[in-house]
Length: 463
DNA sequence: TCTGGGGTCCTAGGACCC
DNA sequence: TCTGGGGTCCTAGGACCC
Image (cartoon, rainbow, N blue to C red; front, top):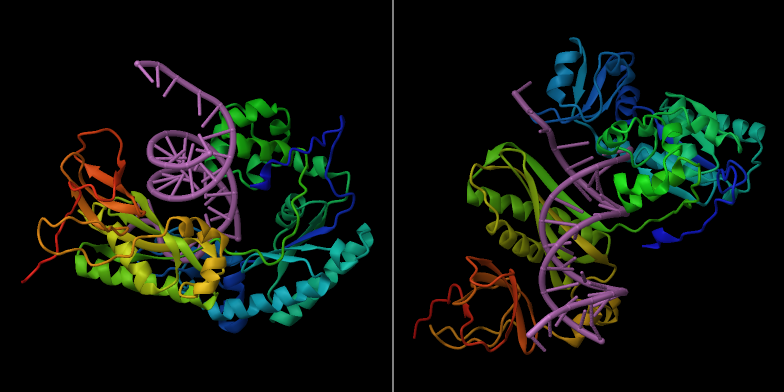
């Protein structure tokens, strides 16, 4: 949200960089998962090792440099890596506890350098060296980084990393890519554009296959080519935020801070099945299992969230998400599962599902059930003004008027067809109708006592 | 034996409020 | 009867990253 601090820092000429000294360090561990395996199993040293999904639908997480020589790459289907690599290649499923332990050893070494360490992933981090009071001269930085690499290898039993140091996150990251594996690159202040401009646009963070292709169509291949585009041309090509970001990155204009302790914004779990699943009972059981994984992790981290998202990948790889935002944050697996089940009901499962996922976002550090904390939480403040109607048991007699509705309830209306409640207040109820519609627009706000609004499935009532 | 799993950020449109 | 503009929230999808 703070993305648009439009500090017009062009200042005319070569507005290169914001920091005057190369004070940002980026560390990238080399072929990390495979390196840990080779460390722990001497028989694997010097041999091609592929870590990742080993089943029929697995993909490669990490290929050792020996395996890369045969063409194995991250994100490649494991089946393809098997075709490329020779007999004797090790295909391993991965031991994440071991990777995490090793990662923690490395992150601790980085925290010895500076209190400002931002882990990007299990095998990557930025360090703000200025916050650690280091000598930021080239010789001093080189000596410090050389020493870091030696301590890293010693502390991890032989895992290596590539280090880049520059005046920004972008330059530090590019530096660590330039000399791999076991590399060290310091980009001196003032030489940023010299380093940047010959590189392919893909070297910049945020340029993936789609953006690169769009740029290639107007003959923009290198960062130098990119530098010649106007801000207007760039934003019209790749969008407002991306365009403005690339415009600055091409000028080495990157003042993003190193942020320790980033708060998670969402928690999710998903599963690709070995074979597509159609059986409703099996799908329901998978939703329960995924909701449990998510709920347990939320509870362990002391957070909960208001938006539950269901992700579905169909037999033909088409992927969709359905979400619902609740009046209150949830972390209870049963509540998460209940919403996810409902969302699953509304998607087409014919032909079978390849993947199911469940996620919770809109996180706040206030767990459900804590009344005082919930009332203090700014995020649920609006709900206090218009409290949910208690899901009082509807009068079960067929035809009885219903004056209380709860989110998720299936309803039917003679003018609007079938739908379900996604919000309710004291005097009105908001319903999303699925059609067939006799009026335009899927959402209707109706008086809560509209006599025509009925539950889709009136509960059985026995006198 | 085609294409994982865990994330972040952005965009666009509709609803809704003032 | 005709019709606004700005801002926020929500939903869905997509690009990208490791």
